[in-house]
Image (cartoon, rainbow, N blue to C red):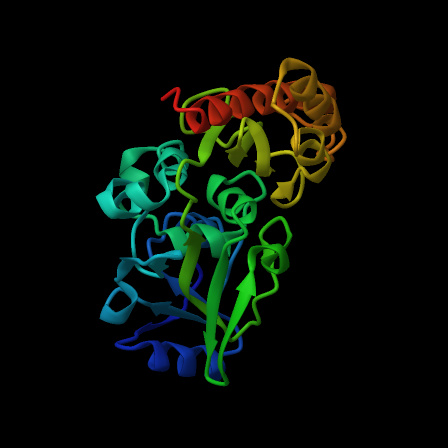
Amino acid sequence: MKPAPFDYIAASSVAEAARARADSDYSVLLAGGQSLIPTMNFRLAQPDVVIDLSRVSELRTLEVDHSWVRVAAMVTQQKTELDPAVKAANPLIAETLARVAHPAIRSRGTVAGSIAHADGAAELPALLTTLDGEVTAVSSRGSRTISAEDLFEFHLTTTLEEDELISEVRFPVLAPGAGYAFDEFARRHGDFALAGVCVALTLQDGNCESIAIGACGIGSRPVRLREAEAALMGGTINDEEIAAAQEAARGYVTTETDMTTTQAYRRHLLAGLVGRTVRTAAARARGGE
């Protein structure tokens, strides 16, 4: 199938894109197009206007400072994954991006596009949620900062207003010596994960000083596994504590049994992934890798 008829605007600035967004009844933003084009071809989306961001040079910046990895809206997943400064500041970003689809997709798809698409099974929304990241949303009315916790509402649904666009995604820099890990299970490489888990933690004198565990593929949005975190916080991350975290994680699976797998199997997968990623992150924090 081919998309329904639409008007096309090649914006030259963020301000022009924002004006076009405000002036249209139903517009979409074209960045990498890896999610948008298929939905338009299948006519799941039938916008009046497509606003192309590829000529907006201010949206191609990738910067790292002492607090944030700042990824502008037109920066591809591959560029972010392979950037040495990004990897040094937060290696969890590169580890997570390496599991997104295939290299050909990452060479075109953008980080901000995946965040805005808000697929509940996607890796990047889970990463942003785990790390307490944030985005800048811009419209003709101005700009605002939205935390990951407040951004994702439901599968393919965010709190962005219809006239807003994400101009920048920000991931926190990991603390020195922090442990991290991302892992997921999919039936085939590149498929959407049946479950995925993202972990970042720090140790102090052998005890867990801070920990964040997030998951994708288990519900209608990315989820922080707060009860699993609580089971590990303050402890030495031993087998007993990990088992308690795994058991606590099972209850976060809300995706019902479907054509891909059963809810019970997703719970089993999630528990296994929590155990694996927590052990890997703890080993890295202890200097094991």
